[in-house]
Length: 202
Image (tube, rainbow, N blue to C red; front, side, top):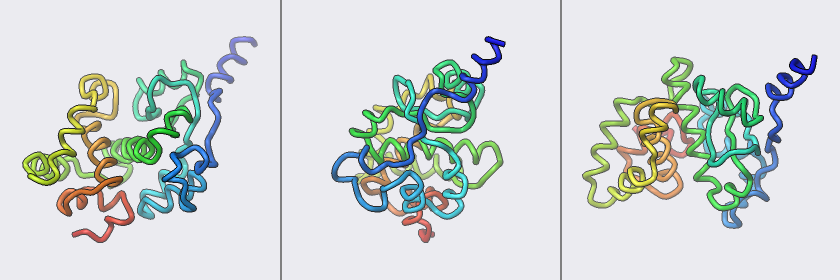
């Protein structure tokens, strides 16, 4: 009976779901569209992306760095044993949000959309299209800094083995950085099924 109770607690998780978002973000990001997690997703993401992301909880739970759970067995194990339960979710501490804000959220949401695409459960990011645009971006005299940023910060070895898959960190870092700052249209086009403001780029 004790073991069953322990398993129930672990499966339910002891992290707390974040619904009210605005007060947790950096001051410059505290806009009306960021009032809640739901309004944040609805504002930034296409209708198709919103439909899947709205059901993925944002959890204030124990973690060394923000991560996505439920994308494979490894992330479920980590989430389970850190008391956050199992299944698709984003795990982040609120102190990370107060510094990284929207950049962190976009990064983690991109991981889920990337994984959903790879699993054949949605169509958000074409890996071949991304790789081609990313190579072009690396040679871009104006925007190559996005690639430098991505290569400096992505922990490709661990995350590509235990994370979503090859190039997953490149997608999440460059996609979130481009969206928060700027990027050329050929790179924005890769994320046209993800971000609402890039939806019409052809």
